[in-house]
Length: 175
Image (tube, rainbow, N blue to C red; front, top):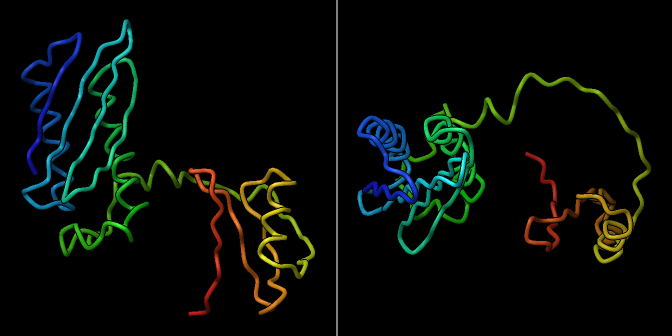
């Protein structure tokens, strides 16, 4: 993967360039040599903005972070970009390296899964309804998801609000 670093309103030191190149090169495990990683460093007043964009085979993955310094930003943006890669894994897997997802250790796990504890349990009645009715309930309640029993199949399903504003449907399948 080729790494391109550009700056605006700042000048990256050799040390910073070395750190950025070393840390970003960890993403080589996902991409072939023809991928381009663009790192954009920008100073906006007291804040420092780091944008990381990876272009590969007609696709793009992007993350950005603002903070007090570029060193902390690069540590924060890498988990975000890796999370994007995993989030879109099914869409882009055929375009990534064959063994891209073999390694078990991933940067963002610690950030997403801190030591958590169960703080609430909720019980509710499953209501048989159509998908359209479930979407209406989702909209009426203003929740991010709605669990229901499909009136035709009797199976439990979930409709959820996607970041784009569209609605998705989850259909559980027994292993």
